[in-house]
Image (cartoon, rainbow, N blue to C red):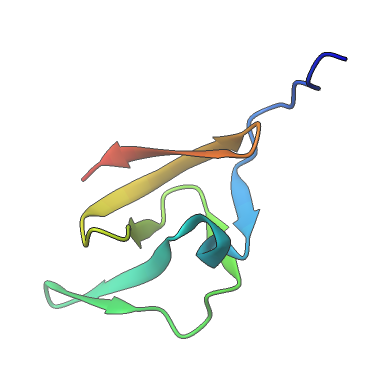
Length: 68
């Protein structure tokens, strides 16, 4: 059976299951956001290696990010 194709999703519920932490930047300092339940296109995320990226979209259970 062929895997079902999905469209690009611009939001993710519970980004922690992908190993991402949603962050905010205050005066040039990256800090984890209080609410880690929702990730929306354009939000900054930190991966497990500590690198900061900008969330682009989710497709077929994969997260796509852009460099900051």
